[in-house]
Structures are given as C-alpha cells and as structure tokens.
Length: 123
Image (cartoon, helix red, strand yellow):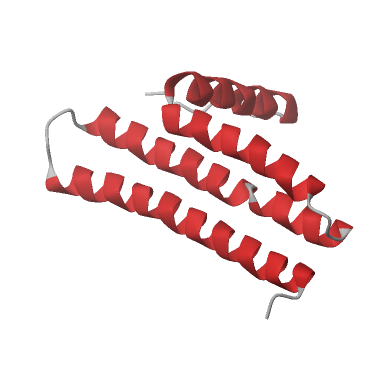
C-alpha cells in the first residue's frame, strides 16, 4: 500500500496552505471572528499614538489567537474524522483545543495591557 504522502515542493506547500486557509475561513465561524478581531485590532494598534515598536508588537501579538484557532480547528477535524460517536477522549481533545484558544486570547490581552501601560506610563 502506497503511503498518503505526495512529493512536496515550496510551491505545492504554499498551495496546500492557501487551500487550508480558504477551507477554514469558509467553514469555521470562530476563525472568521478571529480574522475580524485581527483586522480591527490591527487598525487600533497602528492608530494609537505610541511608538513604532510598540505598535508592531501589538500587531504581531494578534497572530497568537489566529495560530491557536487554526490548531484548534485541526484538532477538531481529526477528532471528527476518527469518530462520530461521543467519546470522552474526543471531548477532552476538543476541550484542550478550546483551552488553547482561550489561553492565546488571555496572553494576547496581557501583552496589550503591558505594552499600553508602558507606552502611556500608567502606573
């Protein structure tokens, strides 16, 4: 039996990544919400009167929840592929993915708080 592993090239990998992005954007409402927050908060990050490095760090921190949401969606898809019936381990895997997203949002919020406190010297 031939393994399900195609030959990879940089172009093919980029194509697969774009296909994944389109698929997750079409089928995951929470990812759409994360993208909306990403755009809105990027606008905020670059319009707040703070230094370039502070704005850049705020902007870059917004990738953390996006990455977590993609990971969570991948976990959910694999669990759904393995079983359609309720199983406690499937629930735990999905809950762990949801926890990842929650922790990423908390981390991003803390990054924003620390940077904004420092930028406006709120002590």
